[in-house]
Structure formats: structure tokens, C-alpha cells
Image 1 (tube, rainbow, N blue to C red):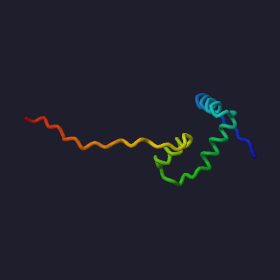
Image 2 (image 1 turned 30 degrees about the vertical axis):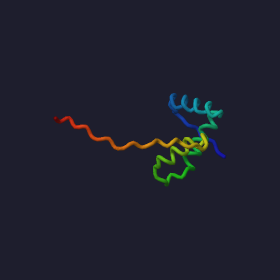
Image 3 (image 1 turned 180 degrees about the vertical axis):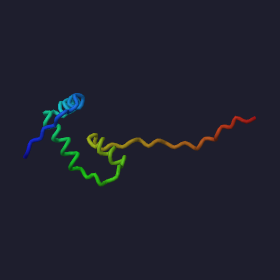
Image 4 (image 1 turned 90 degrees about the horizontal axis):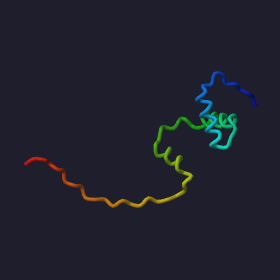
Amino acid sequence: MSNITISNLDDDIKYRLQKRAEKHGRSLEEEAREILYLALTKNHNHRFNLANILEERFANLGDFELPEIPREPIRTVSTFEE
């Protein structure tokens, strides 16, 4: 393994990285390594798919069913003519 140094890192970016690392229980270096790993190993050939993104985002909630919402008949359009 090799080491890298990142010069001129914006203070705000460093602060955000530190907060993210704390949130995940990692060191600043571990968090930066994880971000680079995810950014460079994910398959970027797939198209943007909102359904997949939502599924990944809420996967930790487990399976659940949403109640079915009963449909109502289409309402007539109001006209304001006399």
C-alpha cells in the first residue's frame, strides 16, 4: 500500500469529512479511504435509476407493505360559466 497527501484541502471539506467520519465511527483517514473506495469501485456504467437509489437508501428498514389507497371516481371538472 502507498500513502498520499492531499494539499490545500478546504477547511469546510475537512470539517464535513470529520463529521462524516464521526457519524460512521471511523477516523478521518478511514473515512477518506472508504469514500475513495466506493467512488472508484462502484459500477458507473449503469444509468441513473431513482427506484434503485431509493431501494438502496431504505434497504435497512426491512420489508414492509404500504396500505393500499382506495381509488375514487374521477371528479367532474368545475366550469365557472353560467
